[in-house]
Image 1 (cartoon, helix red, strand yellow):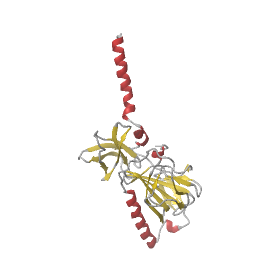
Image 2: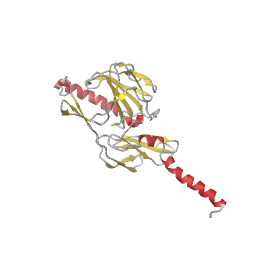
Image 3: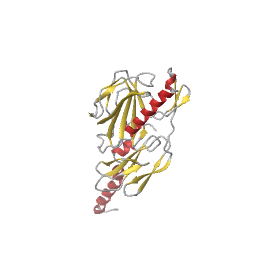
Image 4: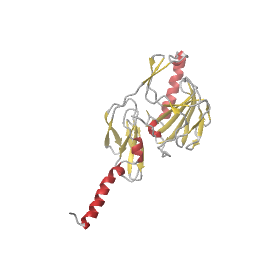
Length: 280
């Protein structure tokens, strides 16, 4: 039998060993680490005094110190990222590998009465191309500000309707996958910022209708579209929970709802990851 002198150090050692997994994975990792196409990967970074700089596919990454213990990079994975090993690049030339799993997305068939919203004419196509560049530039925006929170609030209280990543068919013709999350909500429902940020783009687009982009910091961008009214202006700081507009059905929409995109390092990712409702 062990003596009392040996039992106490052994008990402490065992307690420490069983505590290590909890210390290894902090709250942000448990919330966000969903490394699949259209998901988010959390990668542990080397320890150093200042925030490490890292990139994925040439784009800068959001890096934070998790629970005051370690540096992590939060990597947005586009729907086109293949399953298997990927890597991030550190500023000092080193590379860190991580694995991407697989995920299957369902199909959605939508009928539109306005045929030009399925097959636009040349003038409309020129407009769409201009608007696409404007929005792509907004998604690429990277500011040094630290996001106020990474567990986001729901922007509206409505039911989650059309999910992220669905393969979409309009009048039988396949188009780009659904790049955001839809909420069923009535026209005029206030839309609230899920985290603090700065408004970086406001416009009225062919497909998206009335649209607002909010920069939450370090490449984490929210886009809200199909609004009936916009209550903010470019350059405005909006607090967490601040009203930025109202639900509507402008643009290519079959009825009133909010379409919400979350973009990270230029890639659209599943917003349910950030509100804790993700389902594999």
